[in-house]
Length: 221
Ligand code: DC
Image (cartoon, rainbow, N blue to C red; front, side, top):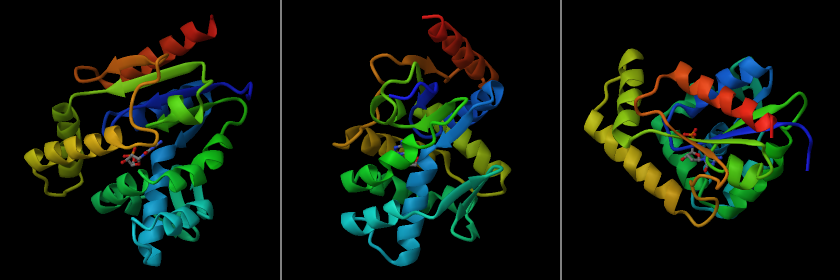
């Protein structure tokens, strides 16, 4: 077990955990791991190589040799800046499928743990507190109703000039939650020792503050 502190922030898609985790990391001067990006990169790499997303061994091989790099807010796959490409709905859908494959999760396990470097790490995902960093001192499970999360995603899409259907987004959100929650390996669920934070009626700043307060309390223990 490493002595380097880790804060884990898990939760369903569009719960705001990415934004909260990034801000908490900045406030503490810690490194930040967006583990969902690794699953998105794996899906994108497989799609680009023509590997079927249900070819477990083929996708796991891509995950094991993923030429991924995170630098100054940009995400790179080999020499290509794929920051925007990995956010496409089709890639998110692909990520959700490859994330259900045990060999893919195993291939990404050590890579995720390697981000635990001084002075500390804030890691966001689905299984940060349960599987990847079970010894983390501070664990948070961020939720919001499917309706609230769909509305946030809807606003983002409209602001970027895309068209979107709120009803379709609610349905997508529910389908992805069901798949992430029902899968056999590392299903989406709060660690028993996680703080549950429902952000349905909470802004980003308040959520960031609640996580920092919780971290301070945990350090005192
Ligand atoms: O957080 P996100 O939307 O970028 O994640 C993309 C997909 O990857 C999502 O369907 C769940 C999966 N994922 C996972 O299974 N485990 C993680 N630690 C992070 C993401």
